[in-house]
Image (tube, rainbow, N blue to C red; front, side, top):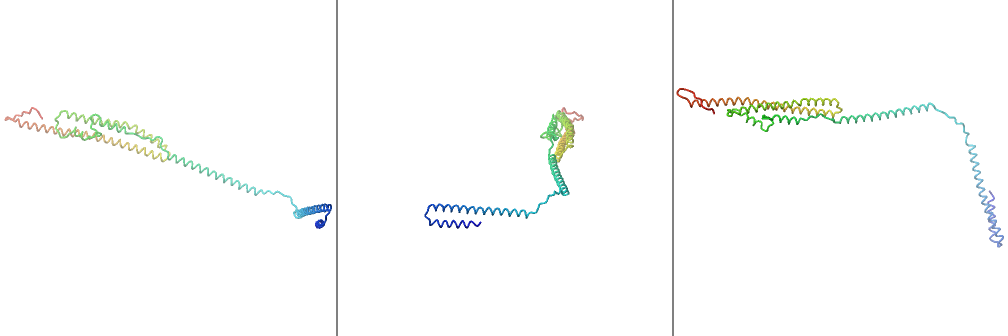
Length: 300
């Protein structure tokens, strides 16, 4: 470690002596000495570094050996109580998770049933039992005015009644009375035909009601119940129309029958009054002194 100053001084001496020399050989030797001195100096520096590294390693080993306590043997310890508690809580969590899954599944099933119930509640009747009576009413109106009947379905039934049954008017035409009887009888016949045609709808109407009752037993929701109520209301309204038609036929028959008998009485009285008046007038005109009665040849 103390050789480096000596080498430095020696090299300095060589440099100083080299400045004043003139011999080439000597200069070569001096240069060789200078190079060898530099090499030695570098080796001395490298050796110093090696010594310092080795000293550091030795010190680190001493610290490790003297400072660290001896390690004892590791004895494994198993805490069975802790393991059992952990297993218990794991099982509890699993049960809780399973119960939550069950609750979610139950909720989904309830929602599915609720949607199914709503769909069933909003579903309509597949085959509602509606009834059509327009053709029946048309047939009844046609029957009422068939033949020579005086029916309410004519444009002016009152005018026809007045024309056939004029009231207080003497019979001057021998065909008037037969015509009046024929019109009255045709009216009665037409009314009876209309009642017969309406009676033919009794059995289909009862079948329709039976079908409605059968459907009401299989009602699923309020929508179908409302449609059943609408079906029954429509059936009731149609029955009321048929009832009105029956009342109209009955009123028509009574009107023609009463007109026939009242007109018959009135025309009979009018004809009798006319015959009495004509006979008295004729007798007054043909009176003889012997108070004999000669009836007139004709009555007008």
